[in-house]
Image 1 (cartoon, rainbow, N blue to C red):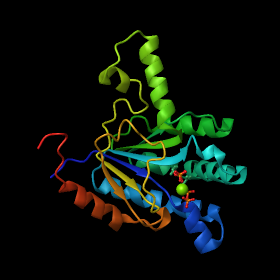
Image 2 (cartoon, helix red, strand yellow):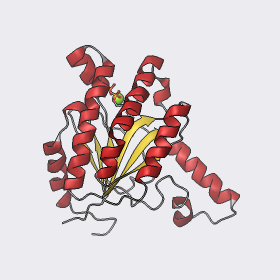
Image 3 (cartoon, rainbow, N blue to C red):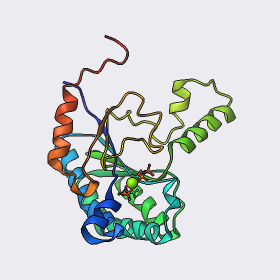
Length: 224
Ligand code: IPE
Ligand code: IPE
Ligand code: MG
């Protein structure tokens, strides 16, 4: 049975779900938040130590302002309402990506990280304004600036995921098979599960099924 520490998820399909059910993309984002809560609970149950959720990419700034504003207002009210509860559950929150949102949201994100920083049950990495290419460029720049040798060890220590093991599993919902600039380095050897369901329809059963499947995969890492 394969050990499992880290699951990464591209939570895709909110917009389509919202349009289909409520004629509003934003309604899909709201519904997607309930799935986030379910999957956090399920991850704890499955003793997963790291859960990385792709919530907003560096490319998502190309969306209409109305949708972007809605997404961040959703995040803001979610964190204001739930951070105490998350903290009580032993969740450590870490933002990966550049915090260049409103002053109020930046502050809330930092305070949520600080408040939960000593928790050990599970670490949730929220990828927000995250892009893998810019992450890698910054890492290479740091290696160069410090006149270090370009090798795996030195690059990894400047990634936003330093000290976090690479994900064993990547899940992308929403019936789309691409990485969309997510964790390009860290996913080098991950088992990838593309799921047809839209994110708001994804549930604990789907998650458990993937974990079960993963446990029995023969992972070679180049060996035979
Ligand atoms: C993913 O769902 C969530 C974010 C990018 C914030 P989408 O909003 O991309 O949903 P679809 O793919 O348009 O249905
Ligand atoms: C990827 O989904 C980003 C997030 C889930 C946050 P997108 O819906 O933005 O990806 P593309 O643009 O279809 O590749
Ligand atoms: Mg999408």
